[in-house]
Amino acid sequence: MKGTYYRLNKKNEVEDCSWEQYCEDVQNFNSTRRINESFSEDKKIKVSTVFLALDHNGGMFETMLFMEDKLHIKVFDEIDEQERCHTYDDALKQHDKMCDDISKIIKQEFVQNA
Image (cartoon, rainbow, N blue to C red; front, side, top):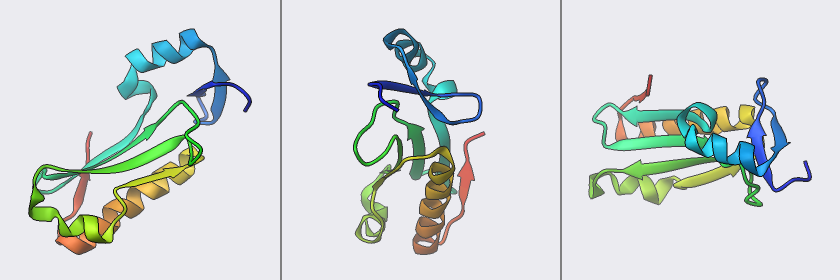
């Protein structure tokens, strides 16, 4: 990979793309860049994994933790709220691991957004 802009091909492999293709993917974010999204049973915690489409030195895929309120603040003490990786398969594993780690702390399961 030598370009500035990237996209996922049909095999979920990262490949170079043009500025025009990048802009098209930005407009179709949910279908082209969202990898996974899960919520705690009470819907107060969300874990989201996306394809960044730019190289951010830590990886092209990012998993982030979002909380609705401060009641779950202990989660931030034990879990990194942002992680990055370089491959689609690693992104899926990273997402599942963050959900599992949070579930152990808050004693709730996570449900994937269908």
